[in-house]
Image 1 (tube, rainbow, N blue to C red):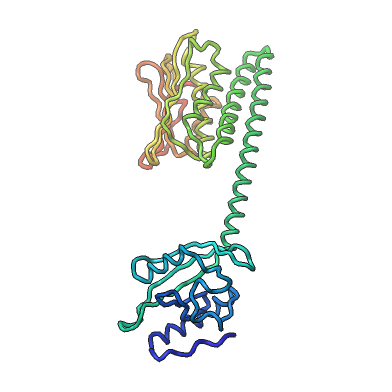
Image 2: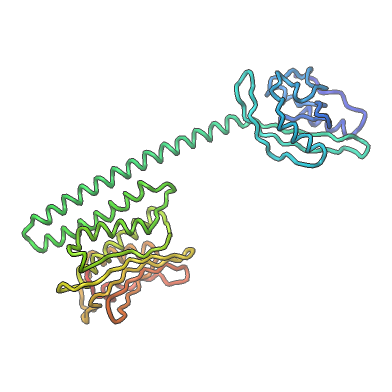
Length: 357
């Protein structure tokens, strides 16, 4: 181990030199001309520099000239004059032995006494391994994201195939009840397929709800609205985005409520419109499905809830949202309202609307 430099007659400088020399962190003390006054043993070891040949040499002369970095010199000159501070300057140093090393340098201006010249204290941290680890981590995350998107894309394709098979079965069956059940199943599978397709194009792990609801409604309309001139289905949503888990639940709720409206709101070949709406403000959001159909039946209380009603009520509870059903003269408006200030107890949808989904 190299011997520490002899103590300087001046007390404060002697103490500073002793601290630098014994530091386990790579340190350099420079004068205002950037000449080395002292170097820690750790600095000499980390950068393979002879401790007997570093004092009284300029910074750009250390080693094989790898410290001759013009931008670093400008910053150090400015720090020595009191015009700047170097808190974390990152520098790529071309080491003739180890290749490019990534260093983080901090510089502090020292005034040990009024009658003493300015000194600079440099702290040098080698972050090469840390940066390489971060790069490998980023590469793995990108690879994982690509694989996940491919998986989601394949899942969406598989669901589309399943939906097509179900629809073919519905068309072939001679039972009206079975046909209705298969058609409902087809629409539910399409809702999940539409979500998977949206996930496969999402970069940030969040799903934009306006395009997702639009694609979802297009899929439902294609399978259940045989005369688009009589019935229309549109989306009115803001630019909100939410997590994949929440979007799954919202998509299933929209599917059930839209199917419910298509089955019950327009009997006897009536014309009309169904609108899916969504808006949010902070943590508060509201999802609505409204129609301009015949409204709620008079015997709503006696209606037996179906599978769709149970699905909507269960998902609303999971989302901590309350269900609100209104019949403003014509048609029905069903809203899911999420608000930290609102009660989350969900009333029975069947009892409120009488529409057995």
